[in-house]
Every structure is written in structure tokens, then in C-alpha cells.
Image (cartoon, rainbow over all chains, first blue to last red; front, side, top):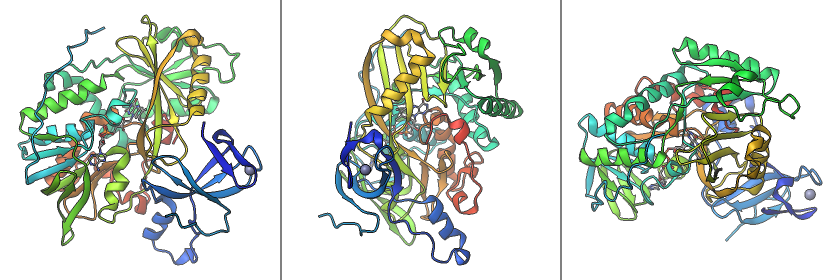
Length: 92
Length: 403
Ligand SMILES: Cc1cc2nc3c(=O)[nH]c(=O)nc-3n(C[C@H](O)[C@H](O)[C@H](O)COP(=O)(O)OP(=O)(O)OC[C@H]3O[C@@H](n4cnc5c(N)ncnc54)[C@H](O)[C@@H]3O)c2cc1C
Ligand SMILES: [Zn+2]
């Protein structure tokens, strides 16, 4: 079983976590002015790269806090773990 | 049970790719091979299928082979029932054994709401001319005696929908049958040929870059299952898809004990017994995006727990192998088939956990869509623009695997 390093609790088993999908998806600034195409993007379209991906996780069976991670979707390696208010780290 | 055919030594050639084709199909899984076959059948034979690995080594060889057409909406009935009808004549059509066994599928209901949803779906199926019945718990027991219908379990079996014409087929033979038939009609099947770029000029597709050089194409059809997002990004196209690992497993060989296919959405396992005797089981997708073709152990653990409660007789069966495929899921659990903003580039993706059953149907419909340059009537509701117009085909309730 994969270990996921919660920024607050340290490495815990994957089964303790809940997956939250792509990170850094901002709520529309002016929803009422938004055309249908952009609503579709906001509601239905998410990045789906084969490689590093910034995503959200919640340590739901532990401290119950959300955090962000950059994970390589090919290898499942967690390349970085960071707080929600931090920018996505640059990974070389 | 049908006898197994000999392993085929030689069913198709491995030609060098030519410089140019009328149609290039990307992906040599069941869908790509079927598309090429139905293109060739209507006289379009200057066609190549490009496969980065070996033919049908992707999801085609990894699925649990369940075939049925009992989805809820008319749009889905159209394409899945079209496919089931083609399955019923496929062995004769391809001249190749595919071990299609119409042993029926039970979709179990475990709560009052499950029961209501199931009965609704049965009635919707009947209105679409699709065979479907509601059976109560004793009826389940009659069809599949090893199912535990005791009321004393956490999620008791209250009944099931039953589609008698549903069943399983041997996935490798299906792929080999299509490959052999397409090859005989003149299609080039090119393995170890990864598409690394898609070239366009003036908003229309002109060809593909591959690990074996550039290939010009009049039209390009994508049949790359879990990897369509990666290909679409090559022409700057975003798709409403996420790719996830989906696992399956088999037991050792057992005596024939399981006469049908049993699926449960609520406790989440689906089981059939393969022709040779293995129990074949699938579960739900892993929650996270991934291309790694391996899934999480806890999913298997939950799936086995569910299987044991439903089938106590499995308690001493040994697990032989587990594996994962990569499936591309869409927001409404329905596929995306049809045109793209790039002229002559066509999409067949988003089948998620359930595209095997569509293999002949979508091959036929996608080939017609590519040939005509406009959607076949069964493909029309599954256009990419439904995510903007809101005309979704929400099949989460009937897709049978949570995603
Ligand atoms: C565990 C599991 C269980 C399943 N169970 C069922 C079931 O019971 N019933 C059902 O109906 N469906 C089931 N499915 C889903 C079904 O297998 C798929 O929807 C279906 O196989 C997808 O179409 P395909 O056969 O063409 O895909 P694939 O066989 O995956 O074909 C896509 C091909 O594209 C190739 N490719 C990818 N990128 C490139 C590139 N850049 N260049 C060249 N080639 C490329 C891949 O190597 C692959 O061979 C299951 C899937 C899995 C993983
Ligand atoms: Zn924590």
C-alpha cells in the first residue's frame, strides 16, 4: 500500500486519504458573465497529464485537513506535498 | 461449454508503415481493430492501425469481458443494443471463434432505492425492445444458486435486473478475429509504433508523427482508450476525461459453479466464471488519476470482502493474478464519439470501465462516422459539445462501476 506524506501527520497509508482531483482550480471571478463554453471548462474539464500533476488530497481518516501534492501519474511518486495556500512548487 | 481453439501462430502480417494512408487509426485495441475492419468492409482499405505496444495489449486484454445492453437512456440503448446484435452474429461474420456466451447478467439490488432504480431501468429497457426482467431474491437464487440471499448480511440481496441475452466473450479472440479479418481486407496493422505527434495544416489533420517516422493521413481516428487526453493535447484539444487505474483479478481454475454473470453496484464487485474455470472479478476504479497500470491494494481487499459476502463458497478459492488497465472516464459515464474542432480528426474515447461490450458496435458506428465525415445516428448524442450544451447522457446508475 502506498504511503502518502500528510504535511501534518507524516507518512500514512493511502486508505486514510480521500482524493480531491486537480488542485488550483479557481472558482470563476464573475460567474454571471461567464459564457457556456467557460462554464463547461470549469465544471467538466480537468487536466489529465501523463506525468507530474498538481492535485488535492484530504487526510480524512487522520487530521482531516486538505493539502496539495504534485504526483507523477505514471509512477504514482509524490514529488511534493504543500499547503493549500502555497503555490505549486517548481519541479525540475 | 465451447472447446478452446488452438493458439493462432499467424493471423496477420507485420508490414513496414507506408508513407501515407487514407485513414490512420491510433490504437490497436478492440475498438481500433473493429473500426479498421468496418472501414475496410465498406471499401476503405487504405487504412493503418498504429499500436504503440502489441495488438490488444491494453484494456482489451485486461477487461472482465462483460457484454450487455441494459443501460437506462434511449441514446445508450441505441449504441449498446446495436453492438449486442452485432455480437450475436460476430463469429460467423469474422469466421473466427470468439466464445461468445449469452449466459445472462444479474445486476443486484441491495436497498429499496436500488430496487426502484432497477425496476425503472427494466421498464426503460423493455420500451427500447431490450430483453430485461426484474427478479426477486429467490429468482436470483434460481438463476445463480451460489449467491447468498440471506437477509442477515450487511447488504442483503433484494432482487436483481436480469438480461438473458447478455454474457461474456473471450477478449483476445475478439481482437485476433477482428485483426485477422481487417488484415485480409488489406488493412496494415503496425505494432510497436507510438504516435508522438499529430500534424495539422489550416485547421485540418494531415498526418501523425510516430516512433517509426512520419505518416501522412487523410483522416485520423483516435481509439486510444485511457490515453486519449495525451493524444488530444498534441493538437491543443482539452477533453473532459480523467484516466484512472481499473483492476481485475482471477482465481485458480474451479469446477463450473457460476452459470451467469453477477454484478453489484452497491457492494461493488462483478463476477463471472471464464470458459476454462477461473473466477474473473472486477471492482471500481482507483480514485486518483493515473497512467501507471497498477492500482491500490485496498481496492482489491474491498472487492474480495464484497465477493465473499455474496458468494461464501469462494472462501477457499485462491487468487492467482491481479492487474490493472487505464480507463478514461467522462463526467456522465458515457463515451465521446465523433468529430473534433480539427477537421478530419475523430474521437472515440471516454468509455471508462465499460467499452468492451461496445467493440463491434462502436467499430461500425465510428467507421461510418469517419467515412462520412459526420456522426452516425448512434454516435450523434455522444458528441463532445454535449458538455457545453448540457445534453448529458447520465449513465452513472447503469454503468455498474463507480466512477
Ligand atoms: C480491469 C478492467 C475491466 C473491464 N471490464 C469490462 C467489462 O467487463 N465490460 C466492458 O464492456 N468493458 C470493460 N472494461 C473496459 C474496456 O476494456 C475498455 O472500455 C475498452 O477496451 C476500450 O477500448 P479499446 O479496446 O480500444 O482499448 P485498448 O485495448 O486499451 O486500446 C487502446 C490502445 O491504444 C494504444 N495507444 C495508446 N496511446 C497510443 C499512442 N500514442 N500511439 C499508439 N498507440 C497508442 C494502447 O497501447 C492500447 O493498445 C474493463 C477495463 C478494465 C481495465
Ligand atoms: Zn494528517
